[in-house]
Image 1: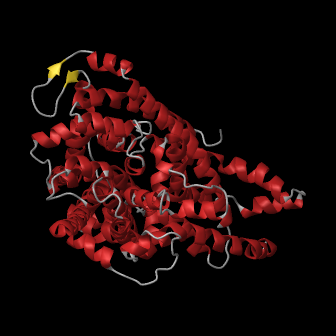
Image 2: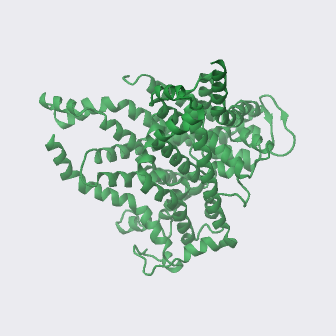
Image 3: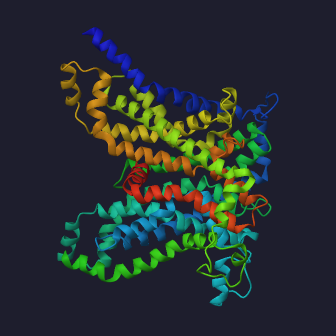
Length: 292
Length: 279
């Protein structure tokens, strides 16, 4: 009996070994090392030197870090409501059972599965100043009189990117909201109807409170995703003009792999981790107490 | 109840048709552009139906630079296929062990692995780069597949564990009394009951890998193993940045494999996305 049990034990470890080794080497180890690296002057080639808090001191004086962080947060705060209003409308549109509902759901969800790289290019062509279809339509209906150079300043490129992301990502939040909507028991509505509540009252008094935790979760996920934004700006604005639309991940990438300052890049990453940590804290809060 | 359904048919259907068409327009416009010849692409006013269909742009992307982009496409394909296999095998084994087998410090192992869901890979690029370099895995398929696997398996293990948790332990006990070995029990009894979950994690691995840009950019930057997404971006920010025939045709090539997969395996995409969000 002990022999069998022993054998079983070894087999158990064989089952988890690949996952654990992978996790140790490529997650736990780098996680531990990232903090360490931020105290070094660490070029990609050549010798690393321990510099104490120099990277952090530099970081506080580096205007680009703060303007990137500010821009990223601004983007996250602006894109989220757009996404949610769209996601909510779409979820309401396909909540129910009628002909073609599955097809519509697929159409709204399809942009989510396309890569960010491809959808950025698709929209960059739509936004093209000379031959873009958007400028053409806007001129045709008389909204503008001369073509807008969408990507030439952050005032126009930020809304343009937000519009693209709304098209691309609304389907994802739509699914979460839809799942929440469908989890509401039909009988609750029937009871409310008997009590004389109309559709609008039912929506605000029953539907919204029940789906609130799901919506809150979807909101936080969308904010976290937006804070990590990179490709959409790299491709559509190249981070410019004058690094005005450089997101924090973009700046970390440039610092580490364009200017080869891995140590300084790690220090900036710590700032990103703090922001993500705060957001994750809210995520836990939402999950912890779904009635609150 | 009946009134509710009927009412929805009456007003939601036409709105849905219009909104669907609007949602599809960007893709339609890209496809149409990719099928036009150079002269027609740069014509004002733009034509919404191509006057003559030409596959010139598709031929061009695959012959450009001696078929370099063809190579990138196959690199993406190979990396994606390997990642799917590695992620599935690791996740199924570990998911089963975490659910059904006796392991010391199970909680610690599980916490470490699930920790990788909370910390995005974007925050670990620099140390990963030094580790991969030290292991001499930079610019190798092995290296990039291992990194993808590290950041995809946590969610997949979690998903597989839940799936095995739903199967009763008594299945295992009775098979053990019959003298079946641990691996046989796993393979013949439990594995066949979890195929839908395995399909879900395979699909998750497929689109996450195919669509990735940043990991591929950092860890696969030599022409030999560059992925299509990275090649596509080089094309867009490089000297072909104004050749929209080429850029639209290559975007279509880049997004088609996943879109086709989505059309056929929708259920698994949605399942993966939803449980990923509500984990």
